[in-house]
Amino acid sequence: MKTILLALFSFVSLGLVASQAQDYSALPFAVNLGGEAATYKKGEPFAKVAKAVKNDAAIEVTSTGNPIIINVAKTNAKGEPAPGASPAIILLQGTNKGSLAGTMDKQKLAAGDYMLSVVADGKTATILFKIE
Image (cartoon, rainbow, N blue to C red):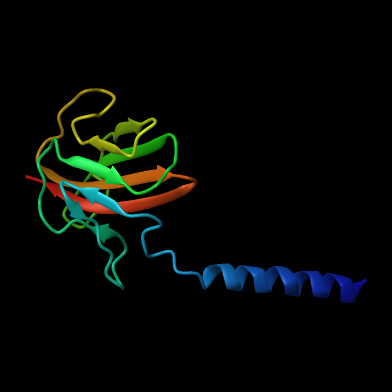
């Protein structure tokens, strides 16, 4: 009985180590914001869009997920969530293109630092960007 439990424990532990060895840092699919591709640099916690974009910038996701759910959350300069800020939601149905102006509440996004979380096909791409 101890041998079976030890074998089972070893198998589960090996599976956990193997899953932690995967690279979760790269984007699972490409995301363009304002015509610029989001890029990931090794050692950074999230991908970034280098240049500031307008508050109605185009979004393009290279995923076939339907729907594609995009959360846009205000952050501080370090990429930490802004206290008390509620995320704006953009829902793409039957398309992989939209814009920052397409939030469900129709509110314009103010200038500042933001985090874009794009969920498609069970995967999430998280990108830091700035609105001018």
